[in-house]
Each structure stands twice: as structure tokens, then as C-alpha cells.
Length: 372
Image (cartoon, rainbow, N blue to C red):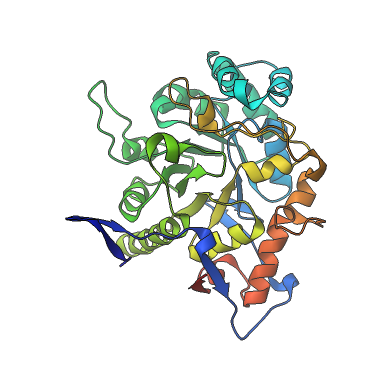
């Protein structure tokens, strides 16, 4: 049980911990890096690194999703993004990459007001499938009923239903809310759902039949969900809570394993290692992938929620690190010339696992943790 702190008369709060609050404790054994595997598998789909690309148009295009697949990860294209609203969004992305921060939010809102075109969903899926990539598209819960038929008919391998916060029991006075359990039961493709922030919600989402649950709200130094909604997720605690929910669900179902994907508070290879050590199976990377020299926005970054028409929740980051941009393979696998863990992200994870004496991700989830 996490510490409960009295914050005032008759009012308590649980104490939570960020990833930066915990450190890994090596065992008596170390391993050679060649003996370490970072592979994981969702349903029939195997990935060599535990990396899921965040569905932001700043970092994810059909081409980048294919490239991420080639280098061992899973790219997720936003079915509500610029690539499904415009035949050729490249000029718009070039424009966005050069905006000043003061005018960026309004311009994002304008561009994302263009209607989504179902024929473009099919076209983008075909582009990725023709290149041999595992195809995953993201849709928000409120648009799932409308867009899912076009996404599924296009032939995706995985569906990601993702919002800032997703629950298994959404109360709605107007119309019938999405019933995740019924929706997922009718599908032949694995579904990943999220984000969520605690044990109970994670367990309920697992009970919908989801293959994976996203933990966290994608918060980074440019997200403003805390300032706008007062919601902040201490990721180390949230991941550990979800890992306990996964264990309980495993017992409840007699062996059905649901993957945990950590989304937020992850900026370096050390953060990736800490997230896996806390219980995650993979991490969802957004802003760290803006260092990819092939990123659609040329190094600029904005969260998917930054373009919300009424309540944007993300600060636009202009191109501030062009001299640090490297090809995706180097960003993921090295070599790196930067000493802060922002490059060679999964080489850093492998070395951490080797230094702590573990040969695969499931073993690494048992590494001892200590509060820094």
C-alpha cells in the first residue's frame, strides 16, 4: 500500500513517485550485451525493441512508421491527423516546423479543423502495408464508432484507441457511449487502449479484452494537462499499479497477459530502463523521436492534444535542436556522441539490463529499485 499523507483536516492523498525518483540496483551478476534481448510480442506481432511511436504528426508519418518497423519498433499513425485530412500534408508540416510559439496553437487548431477523409485512411494504410510494416492506427474514443469501420476495412494489423484519459465506464447523457468490451469482442485485430493512471482503471481496461493498456497521459515538459486539468501522473507509481493489475488479471483469467505501454515522463534511455523496471512491457515515445532527422516536422514537436479546438493541452516546441538530429537508426541503436541518454535510446536500455544482470525484459521487471 502506498503511503497516505494527511494534507488537511479530514483529507488525505496518496504519495506517488516519478521515474526520476527511482534508481536501479544491479545484482551480483552482470552480462555481456550480446546476451541481452529487448524483444517483446503483442499477439502474433514481434518487435525487437519495446518502442511504440506516439501518434503525433510531428514525429510520425507513414514513412517514419515504416522506418520504425524496420528498426524493430511499432509506429502508430494518427487516423485523426494531418495525413488523413490532406492529400499531401508535407507543405503544411514544413510550415508548422517554422512557426513561432506564440502563433502555433491557433495555426494547429486551424489545420486540424479540416474534415477527415476515409479514402485517405485507406491510402495511408496501403502505403505502410505495401512496405511490409506492421500497421497500427490511432483513433480517439469519441470518434471510434465513426472511423473504426474505415480503419478496419483498410486492413490494419492493430488498432490503438487512445485519448488523454480512457475509461471502461464512460457516463454520457447524450447518446450511447462507446462500449469497449463489446467493441473489442467483435474484432479480429488486437486493440491497445489508454491512457489511464491507476490500478482500478487499468484492471477494468484489461477486462475489456484489450491486448495492451497505455499507462500515462503522454506528459512531457511540453504537455499542459497538469496546468489545464490539474491531472498529473507520477509515472513510476502508475506503472507499478498497472503491473499489479496485470498480475491480478493474469490470475483472474488463468493466464491472459495484457501488455503495459508507458506513455509520459520518458526522455532518455535511463527513463526507458526505469519504466521497464517498474513493470512496463514497452514505452510510447513522442518528443524523443523529434531528434530523428527524418521526422515530418523537422525537429519541431507538439502533442496530439495540442490542437484541441476548445482546450489545447500542449505547448508547441520549435526546432531547437537541429544540430542534435540524427537518422532514426542512430537515435534508436547508436552510436551516440551525446552523453545525456537522448540518443542510442535502446542501446542504453540493453546496457542497463546487462549491467543489472538480466537477459530479457520480463526478467528486468524484477530488478531491485531504490528511491533516489
